[in-house]
Image (tube, rainbow, N blue to C red; front, side, top):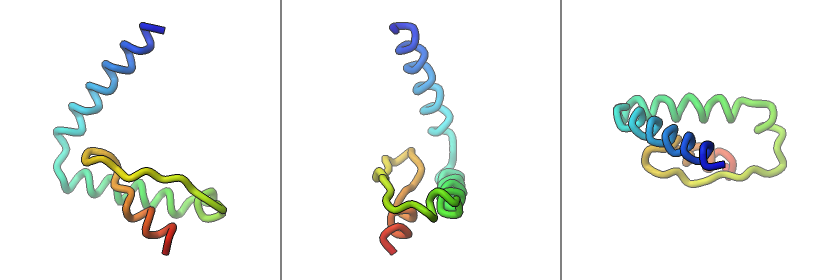
Length: 71
């Protein structure tokens, strides 16, 4: 169990480091790509309900999905 915790901690640190090196434009581009893929998926289009989080600064921007779902 401790080994998995340590691996997860190391992985989070690596991902945080990678994200910190991305430009704002690249983060926005990748967020847009993820949003479009999600909204075009059959599962999303046929969903009766969804759960969504409000993103933190270095996470996928979810406002577009939220607006679309409420639209």
